[in-house]
Image (tube, rainbow, N blue to C red; front, side):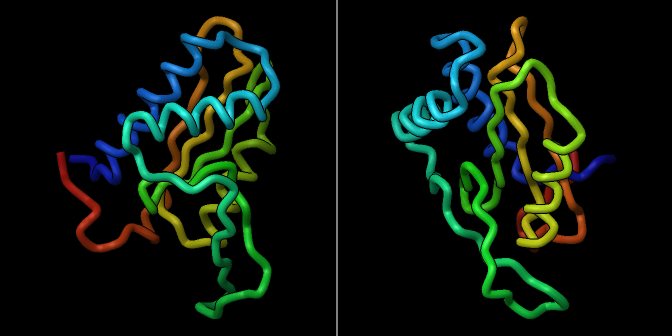
Length: 137
């Protein structure tokens, strides 16, 4: 059996993202999708923080430097938005680095720039899963 982390929250996030993609189409500026997704999340009652500074850590010590992902949803999902023709390795690396340095277990990389469908990837860093946020399906 595979552990699931923030599964329901992820479905709700992606439902909002698909609504934005279906309404707006592909290829607009990332900032347009950012604002549109914020409106959609708000209308659905999904808690989020936009461009929220997240604490960074080194050897369990908090750093003065902060990471600023596009969205932080449900106080547990780090979200990076893109509007590119396809994901590049550096997009995944950026999200994974944000997750790792902020000790957040779940991240979503969402690309509104792909022509045929909304492109997205979910990442889990199992070492940072908080107690009570894991279920086995």
